[in-house]
Image (cartoon, rainbow, N blue to C red; front, side, top):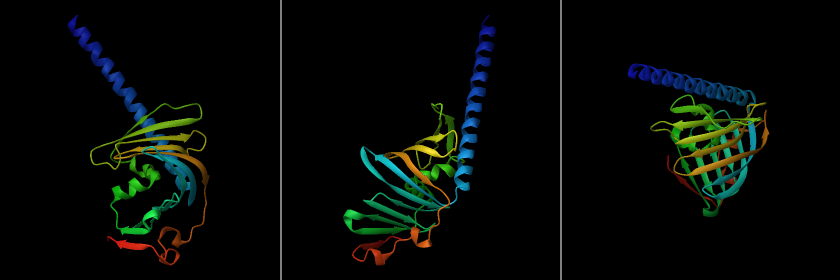
Length: 203
């Protein structure tokens, strides 16, 4: 009788692991499709509203490959693939650095499109009739502890992103424009436009 009970529990465990593995594979397939859709969109400009640790903000992010410009009005970040300029408007100063991959990931909310491939465990969340929800749990040393992404079942474009690390940021996508044309200057700080700003070079 005891052996039958052990055998039953063993098969239940195998079934649970099989279902869990299927859900992880489904989550990765959805993220693969989202990444492919994002790549196909080319250069993009995204309008968003955000909540960072209870503080509301709104703005835009322009993305071209691994380059981006994030602008909330109070904060502007330029990243040209190597150097990052972090401009806090109220302080009238810009910090320039060569950030690590982890630091870049924390500044760009769309970094999950590459992060999920390594260092994260993927699973399905509470999907609805119109959206998929995918959960990424960071392994040791990952940029984020947890990332929650909701994306359209029709386009696979993200509609909501929540990142959790030392701080929590929630982003709701309000607009998405693909096939944009950005000059190289979009992703670098132009001192001529901000002549009174102090530049602190940390490179």
